[in-house]
Length: 115
Image (spheres, rainbow, N blue to C red):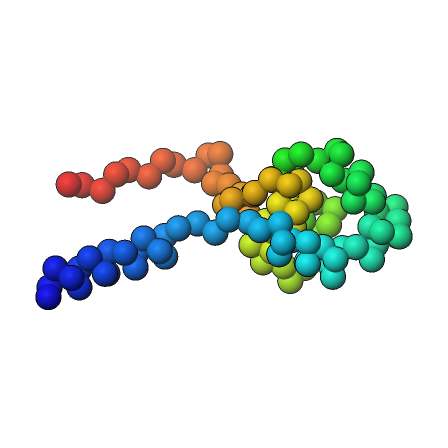
């Protein structure tokens, strides 16, 4: 009985630790409701989706624009996962955990735990 409980507990920990993968289907729905009105009508010189797709191949660049770039105000209220989903839709590439902020370049390395 004890062994079964530990095995189930271990599997639960694995399920929680798995990173979310960005979804283009979710990204399309978000794009259509949050972005398309400006990008489809060139409001404030917003480039059309075809131009974005032709010029931006890296999901991290889309996430950067949404997080710290020119689209920050429009992306207000979007979660990191939402931004990754939009990036996956626009680039046709999964962003994986690219939505997570990168560690600072001067951050000290983390030492392994003592055994």
